[in-house]
Image (cartoon, rainbow, N blue to C red):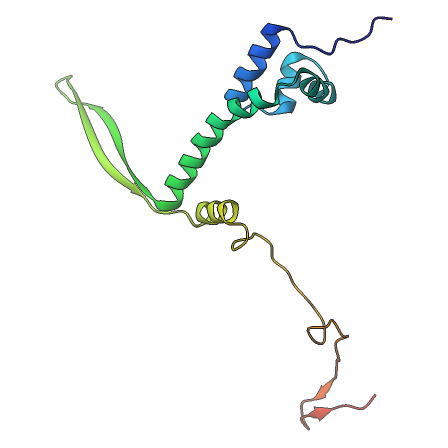
Length: 150
């Protein structure tokens, strides 16, 4: 039985780098190459493509980062509408519109850029005090305003 090959061909390497440049994931690329994801990631390590892939991923990440920043702060854009007049001519209308800042985009930006100060984590602590002692429950008699005895 032949041993499976560990190296990608030069064409496969070029394709892999191009697909990462388009923002594809490991799973998507493995599927396109028709190999299991685990095999794909193992071969990546063997072929030492880490630096090249990191560089290829940088462009899509920078594009998303720029879009997120834009949405977080709000932005203007131009909307172009074409309409046909009764005489058969076409009229183009350009309208300048504004997209308000998006709160979720702001949170994503802050949580990723300054994680020491901004986190998505919500914690809930239930206890009798800050040391985590048990909670003391008492049933109050509403007519008398005091705790009922056990």
